[in-house]
Amino acid sequence: MDIGIVGLGRMGLNMAIRLSRGGHRVLVSNRSQGPIDTAVEAGAEGTESVGDLIGKLESPRVVWLMLPAGQVTDDHVDEALEYLEDGDILVEGGNTRWTDTLARAERARGRGVHYVDAGVSGGVWGLENGYSIMFGASDHAAERITPVIQTLAPSPEAGWGHVGPTGAGHFTKMVHNGIEYGMMQAFAEGFAILDAKKDWGTNEAGDEITADLDLGQIASLWREGSVVQSWLLDLIAEALVERPGLKAVAPHVPDSGEGRWTVEAAIDLGVPATVIAASLFARFSSRDETQFASRVLSAMRGQFGGHPVKGDSGVDGEYADQISDAGTVEIIPGGVRTEGAASR
Ligand SMILES: O=C(O)[C@H](O)[C@@H](O)[C@H](O)[C@H](O)COP(=O)(O)O
Image 1: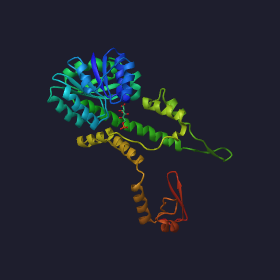
Image 2: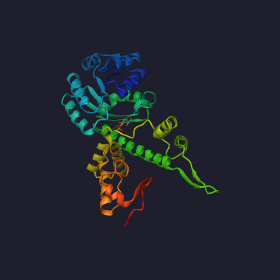
Image 3: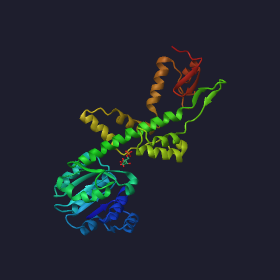
Image 4: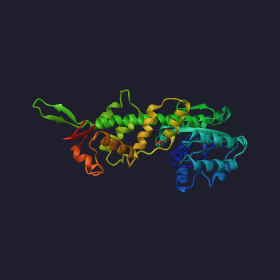
């Protein structure tokens, strides 16, 4: 069938290619020309603008926006609605906040345009493996877009679904990503514990035995037969085998909003989401350069207990007077060991 794809970033370009390979007539529009050329090589037709793309589609038209969530998507929804007509379908496949989707669907309804919100998972691997697609739509729009969904999905029968009315697609994808945060955090913490373990007691001669665990080996062996086997684990195994220690990766984890919205939804609905909330806050901690909360904690301990307080440059800090009273400070895994410290 005819479909127009607007936005040829990491996701949109691969989706356009997969749809072209699947035999659909795919028209593409993008701000820069390079991705258009790549899509055209794969069988798509390039266009000059959103208006040009919509003008060349057969009615009733199906236009799929695949853009970064937020203002860019909002602007393109309005632009597309200028050209779309009664009975046309506008699909929005970004990681959009579901409440924004409802507002945009309202604007589309005012022009007689069916609005479909598609949660699309699979990342850069989707081109070859297919995308998991969860979409919200009216029954009419769902039926009309099913042929393209089946081509994008891992198979025509599986990995996709019409999950509810408009809004339900992005709501479902939001929760999917909340789960993703929790699973990622659990794997990350498990491997951090494995990485920290070095001491294995003493041998018969009384010598201490120390040895690092091979995390790449452990991740790889878990891939087959273990309860925690998963695609995320596959990716961890590849990363740890190729880059042991991950020294080139900064311990700084961004987020695009889905985890925050999942926690907000949990609060609105009164549903406990302890793991997802903790994993979201762990990402915030990774970016907290000031570590102010930890400074407050350490200062309080120093004040109420006379416990040693480590300064920014070793033991010489703002609380150096307390430190000298307390003795030397040594940071050890799992806590602070002090020598000669007056303790209560
Ligand atoms: O299902 C997926 O394919 C991913 O979830 C994908 O959508 C993307 O990689 C996340 O949006 C990253 O989200 P954060 O930036 O919030 O980690």
